[in-house]
Image 1 (cartoon, rainbow, N blue to C red):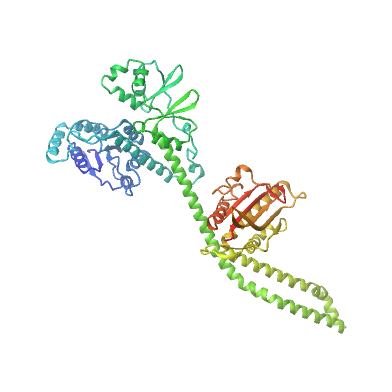
Image 2 (image 1 turned 45 degrees about the horizontal axis):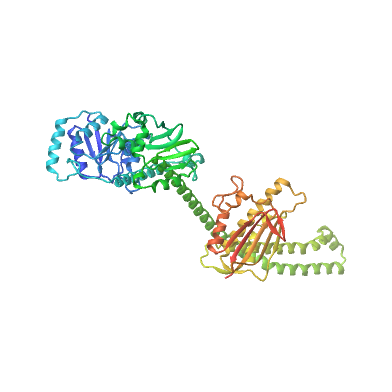
Length: 630
């Protein structure tokens, strides 16, 4: 059975030529549109049990249907991961010659080879290379017929004609960098797209502050008095080494890149002049300014500096100084790969933060709606109970007076026996207290329902005039079950102030977050040291404050817990940062608090730990919220 080939080319003329050439050699050829997803095609063929093609010849620049990534990355990766025998040959139909660095990119990607566009000078060599990869024989007679027919029919000088296009060095390098960035971005996106949700697989190899000494560094040093042929021999044996570090008596002297060495030797009489002479002569004849960076330079900074170099240096490797006399080489390809990995990590973190915020907002919106419905359903019966307690107290007082009068005026044995049997004396004594307890419970329940209704207004769009003291009281009512009798709450309210323009539900969330964290801190301290004469306490105070000529309403919420360590204080408002044990905090409470105060209300939130009260330094934590009064 003849080998089968799938072709996907951008250039229509090149596509027709490749199809004619391969069919003339007896191959079964299928042409795919550049817009068709080749990876999906291969998956469907394998799923249906169809024979996969022996070769895929595709343009290295074909993007996916959405134009977001190179299909070359996807196809090569899929073939490699699925262990299929299909060999991928990439083709650059826009260039007459393939740069060594681009050839290396294709090899790393997993392609069998990277070929230039076809023209009369390279037709036989390229077809023979494809035949070698596809393991079929070449019919030269058929090629000559294709050559003659195509040249007679086409007027396109880019096909089967001597090459005439001359590309500037800048164009070649720019094209190289853009294509590599696109390919690397696609690779990284695929890696993260296939990740599982386990924490171990979520971690990436490089942190956001990774340095260049953590990357793959190359070490090939040569004394300046050694011959140029030794450098060439080593570079030929180690194709990934980007150049040579020259040393003199063990100390750094200079650097020659692989590309620069090849350029020098390609000059007229270059090999005769430099191969047998000391390599320092080659360095003197063509050394470029080398960028030397300390090993602790961040990857992001190094990538920016590398791409800002002059045109002649834009694709030169970098030299990394590990310590005083220890130098290594860094390929720009590896640097850009690391920079993109860090960029993707940062983007992923931002996506995770945005997703977590959305989830939190959705939860709060659902909670607000649920609380509004529950509070509305409870409010009516609570009002009924509270409204009738007054009547119940009055009726009980009337009945008690009547019974006491009957006891004094009637001394009947049956009545006395009933009083003793029913313990009427205790009932008369205890009934007012029971009714009073019902009244207090109904009032507390009504306050709780009011607080829940206020808290449920999370979807407020227009600010309203509100009493900040009422917001604080409602927040404490909702948290009353956590306060219990163990924690004392001291309130020092300035009754002359308190009304501001704001969003009541959102400010209640701020107070509940801060007070809730204070309660957690106090309970943690109680677990460690016990009571032992120490009284856990939360102090809430309000007042007016001026800053930079502006008037603010100040709300201070302080506790006498153990406080927040200095190294944690600068991160306390970061998303996902928490000082609580695993599973006890989301790390979003204080971030949302900061957003509500600063962005929604144009205020400020300050942290002091320890803090000063009445002129004395107190161990614990104090949050001060400043809200503009106008």
